[in-house]
Amino acid sequence: MLKISANEIKTKGIGALENETLITVRGREKFIVLDIESYNYLRECELDKAISDSINDIEKGDYKTESVDEHIKRVLDAV
Image: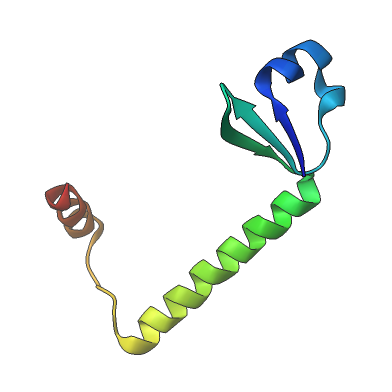
């Protein structure tokens, strides 16, 4: 994976980036640049995990049935 500073991007432009480029700001790792296919794959994995977790919660009975107003009140009360 290429590692580049934000300052180098300013001076070299977008051509300095490659797939899976780690961008640092003031020496600290801050951003990752991915090609769109890699990003979409990771996003799909994240959504598959969320669906799997939801199915597991439903199978265990670990969920609530409530109105929108009840849900909003519960969420706001937790803050």
